Image (cartoon, rainbow, N blue to C red):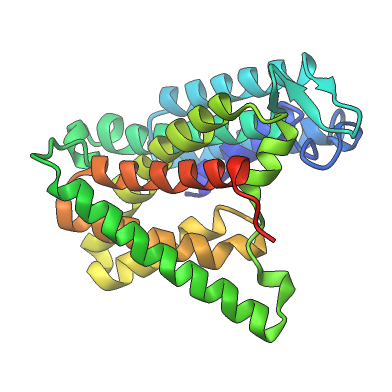
Length: 277
């Protein structure tokens, strides 16, 4: 997870993505951004070498993420309010998708390449029928109910600082309402990569060490912290518990991916078509 964060920071810094969600001109660029990115990349490579881990998958993920982010930033335009937009999509969202790719690369690098495990070790197991997916939807609804209760409690007690940000609405606004691209990036690619890392890679490893309950809690806490925003930690923690339970009960990553993608897609559709006052 440390290596993953270092690679992610490298991509954001070297690619010029820092600050694009709050202003095109506030992005960290040379020399500070490059120093941060190079230092993070160097530390990641040192850790990989010290622990005799495979270099090429992570180097490939770093190069691809940096290339995609940097190119989109260099070719981006200013919408007039300081947002960096490339092909109708905020550079911040493109960078977030590249970051998700690093998550998937980490799982593959350490499971499939380092220890020569089959892809089934990451949860790529075929399911039969619709029952696993119906169970995934049911668990998603449970997690969503917890989220709604949490938000209502925050409103009652006036704790505005912990109210989850409407990320989907922000993305759509910055993307000028480009819902197709937003759903592909946020509702499909992002959830797939994150599930490979958090549920396919992190969770099973923790189960072997700490047991099911603590593994669910720890992996969900990490899932929440990786979303950085203070208001997003509790909602993503609840979602992580639901998705983790889906994975453990079904033995496959596909239902968890489906539920995660459903969650993000519904959020985007609500932000696009529903007005809440």
